[in-house]
Amino acid sequence: MAAVTALSLASDIGVQQAILEGDSLEVFKAQTDDSVPLAPFGLFIDEVKSLSSQFVKLLYSHTFREGNSLTHGLARHAIGIPDFLVWMEDVPPHLYSVVQADLRGAF
Image (tube, one colour):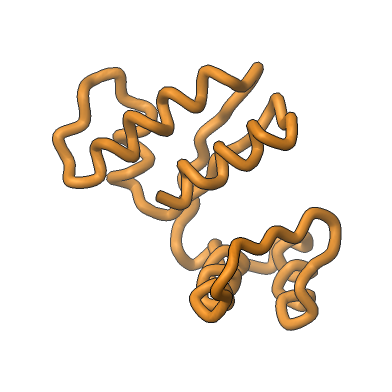
């Protein structure tokens, strides 16, 4: 579901090249496989594949959970937000140190 939302938003704001990153190897394999997904999340995978055609270049990257601290922090924060919220340029203050560590490759 996160991949569908991310690709929809990226397409809506005119992003033409993107990297879709996630820590679920099962989902990663399903997104990059040409077969019809039979998993419970198969409809989401179909939607990701449909949305992917809107990009000039879309890469998929599997990241181990240990290296995904920023995404985990954002997801935990998002649970408490009742509306749709997007940060385009600024980093949420409570995640600034995690972003800095991620940029340094400390995770």
